[in-house]
Amino acid sequence: MSSSSPSPPPSDYRPNFFTKKWIITIPSLPTVKFFRATPSHFNVWLPLATNADNNKLQDSKDQVWDEVAISKWKDNMYDQYDKSNTDFHCLKILVEFDGKVVGFGDIFVVRPGVANIGVVLNKEVRGKGLGKLTASVLTQLTLSFGLQAVAGTMRDNEPMRSTLRNLGFVEEEKIIEIEGRGIVAELSYTLLREAWKDIEMSVEFEE
Image (tube, rainbow, N blue to C red; front, top):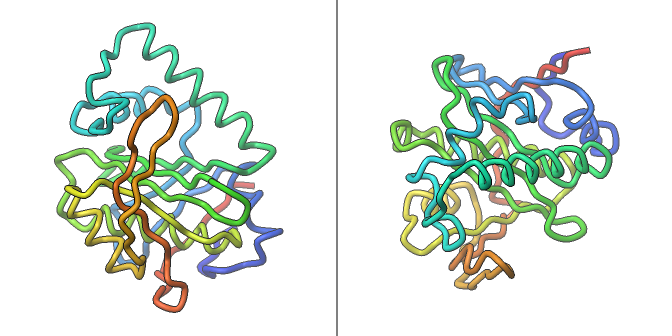
């Protein structure tokens, strides 16, 4: 099934992204694809997650990715995947560009009715508009799930700050700290719904 409609009924739409295989494409950018990250993708997902350029937060910047750390990461991702198949709380996606997986993102429900979006891209594809596109796809999915979109980033991450502002998110100085992880954001963002403009994207579900 293929759909270009951005906002089907959330009750019918959201579970499909956790119970079926799917691909999101952008008609104007045929070399870009988005699909759900699952344990079957660990071989392409792990290099992104362990890349030092992609780990700048307090809890990950000095991480040594030895066998124990990698095993722990896999266990955590599998547990989130397994839990999400029934409670639909965390959707992780992979970003493919020119046939290569170059980034990942997620939609994570932080409280009832509200979900945080996050984007991580390899250094070589930054500055090409792919970050904004990925954030746009995640935001549109979040809204179509019937959720409010929020985000957070560090003060020195000007590209992400600019992206979120351009998409209609309102910036607020707010330290976000998670127990066991430290400070994960110095600025928080909430989407101003009336400022959002739907993007043209196609979702194909595999029956």
